[in-house]
Image (cartoon, rainbow, N blue to C red; front, side):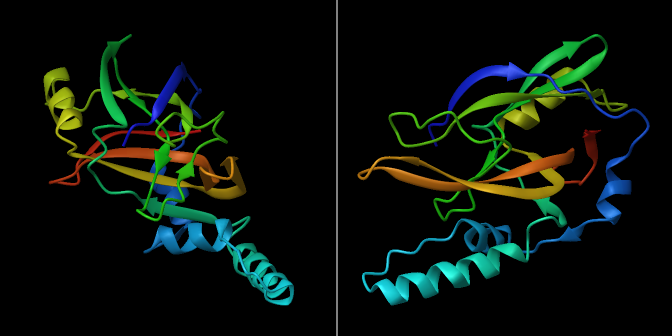
Length: 198
């Protein structure tokens, strides 16, 4: 995956809020790809009547997801999108390109991309994730886990608007997911590395 990245964005966390607290009010999605496809969709019917019917069905299927709070477990294997940047002010800092592609070519992103790069992937800003360094865990441990793709990403938030970029020969459709909470965990043990609620 050749995702192009811009400057980092630092977003303040809500003091005192916990990821588990907002997760309890969210509906879990076993298959994020189905929800993404329902919202983004694709209607390329040649028959005008069939095209109208397809668009109508797409709108109905997408509306069932909008406005609802969801919990998404994106799994691990994000070494191309997630890196450990170091310790700043006593806090561990990760940099994440906020994109998830379930393998359908319809990515979920934290904001609408600015454009596509030469490889056809969205141009996105890195999101700064700061948190308390877990007890018994060193900066070297976090760097190794991120480099090997052994960090699990969990999100809580709501689906927002679908987006489309590119021309006739290279068109990509995706959907914005407004993140309300994020947790990074060790993939093998499930141990929380850090979490943040926005």
